[in-house]
Length: 323
Image (cartoon, rainbow, N blue to C red; front, top):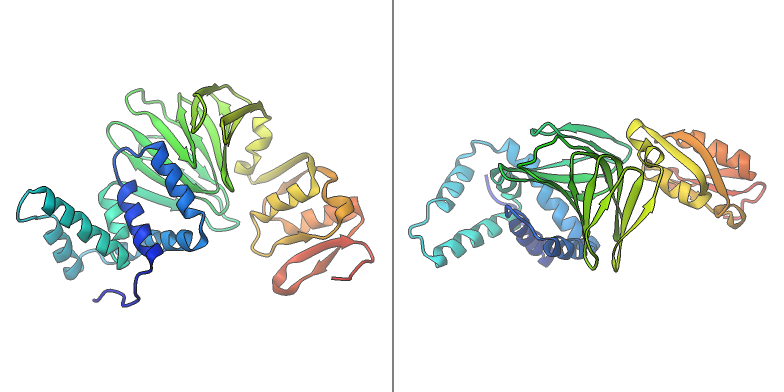
């Protein structure tokens, strides 16, 4: 077997370095914030996804003699000097850059990535007895140790039901927000540059850059801003109805509802009807059921659904087809 001959880009090298940095037992909130800022660039996000996909590649390479020899050499330095330690780290980074070692490197550090595709939801039972429900197009990284339980929400949304363990804090990192569970059920979502937590049961502590810690109670949410996290009341049952496969809208502007429905669709809904975009809609829809939502919106707002190239649907005022 041989390494890929595709030259590593600067983004690939930086992605490899981030893998190394984030593999530490404890990762600071500042480091996570820097990582998410870096990952906002599309080329960086793509490079990081390439590193993560190597997880599956390495699962298939288990027992490969060349890989075993490489890891054996990296794990047996000739001396214990600081220089040799740096050489080992550099070697690991080089392997990551080559696109060969990322998956195994994370496995050796007891971290696991779970993900869903667009339109998919997934229930995950963690080794500590907690459970996670992943929403559409979402990714988390799980690292469990004897002293703490660390979850990183890398993309999308997840609902956490945390098993009580006073000796091992359960923390979820999402952008500039860190949520510490105090025996609880809560939902965390990344939405662009912002993170939001919704508390269903129990209590959580919310830490955000630029603000003081806050304790949330059921039916409260906190969203990050430039000055920490802003807390407000919320209907937790409505906000987490996605976990049961439903999207619940209550006086929600049509454009906002369309954006939410589109999270579950590969063939999106577009709207070109200024008179209707900000008009509220209410109703409960099955996640991923584009036809039902389009039918309801068309009837309520007197719109027409026009097929677009690639499978999208555009909602326009009825009898108007000037696209």
